[in-house]
Image 1 (cartoon, rainbow, N blue to C red):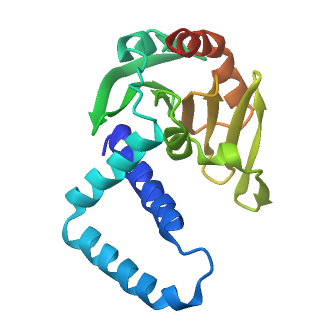
Image 2: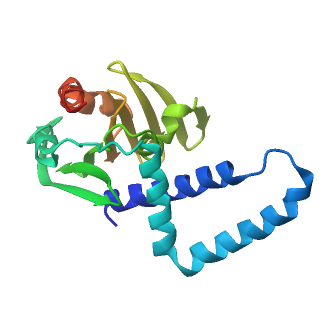
Image 3: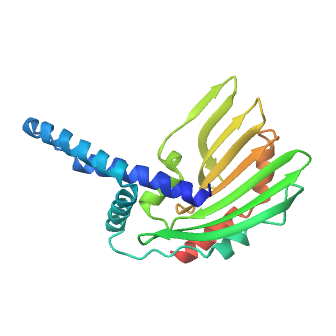
Length: 219
């Protein structure tokens, strides 16, 4: 499944969660029964007609955008930010796309790098800076995480002046680094067969400031 499709699914789930919160009664005891029945009906409708539920969620998202059209960065420009080599690894694949539904659009560029049993995938996604898109792309940006166990660790932090999330599995030497760039889009590095310290080398090979400038120019 393409990453852009996963983003839309994530946004859809968040949208339904947000809508349920908005529809909940303030505190009136006598409305609780009717609310439960309504929730049951809504759940049945979403299950029997997911397309209709998705359309409704997207309409709600459009309303949250105040009817403004949000332009995303051309994925071809995002692709230019993915170098031919990264930390000594050759780029083996690069792709990009612009996907949209119900007036909401995301732009994505993706590149894969491989060498000596190591694999790295870098993805840059622009959701246009829409608040709900940021929730779907980088929910971790609204949390504080610092966990560690025998398998590895995960934490929220700041990298290159950007909000970031890191996780590493010490057993299979895999992990990821995600940055909320310019408060608008997300750059994610996923790696296999590497130590956590290698992530710093990967970041040095990417122009984070250049991506931030692209997003800034699009605002």
